[in-house]
Length: 364
Image (tube, rainbow, N blue to C red):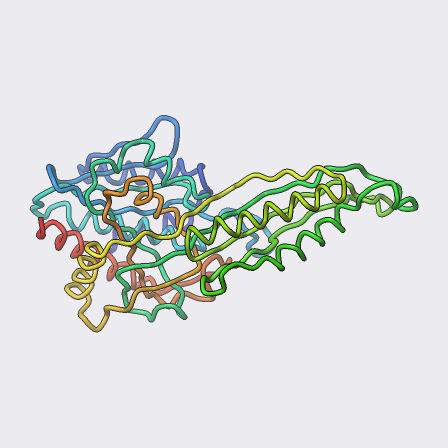
């Protein structure tokens, strides 16, 4: 466990944002190759795949690699405030715990980039690294209000998420002549009001909100005609997300037409809601009970947060997958720049995942 703690310290102090995880890839590659483990990397992207054992079945453990870009103590920088440094450490610890264990099958470890962009899992699918996998397990640290420290949930039922970057494209005007243009700030305000009025089935949790807006410059006497904005959309089901997105499109088109401006937007991230599998959940439950005791087995977690892990089962429906929820006294919350958690949860999660893998192999 001294080695595992050192791995976490290194990963935590060397964060890299989505699609830039090249140092992280090299670090894990060198670490695992020193342990005599077979590693596959890619010529055109970060991320790696490691494997122990041989033959069928193939059971996989996935860990996300990327950090967030956020303001910390007045400075914008890469920061591991979503626990991906812990996820990589847990996966590495599980690999080291199993590498000298006789295995009746293959255990594959996916160190996946760009989860925060919602595109890393899709890239791994395109690489074919999950085509022959039978069971796939992920993990995620959970906030204290969701899961008690020392408890583990056998499934995280994530919602869908989409992040949009948009632009309002018009002309600037003199501050004394507001009749000569459409004020991009007014358009942004109207857009924010319109999306707050979007309603779909209230029995399904959902939300849509503006998360950034920039317009104008250093000259106070110019009415800005251009602006940029960001939108965060959440829905508990993939069907509800489609409805929410359709309503957003209508709001943007109506504003553009009314103000006679151009409004463009693109999808910067698209994360699907979870597709769960009862058999995988059962095997994970058994792993929790074996490693931590039945009292540590918690109920399924339903959260409005998202994770691109679920693209694996959507794109490859044969996969039987679930995500382990790790109770670790995480506070103040995920994505908070000063997020902290109980590091003692890492070795416990290693034990749980190791046992879940063994249970899975035993049942083939």
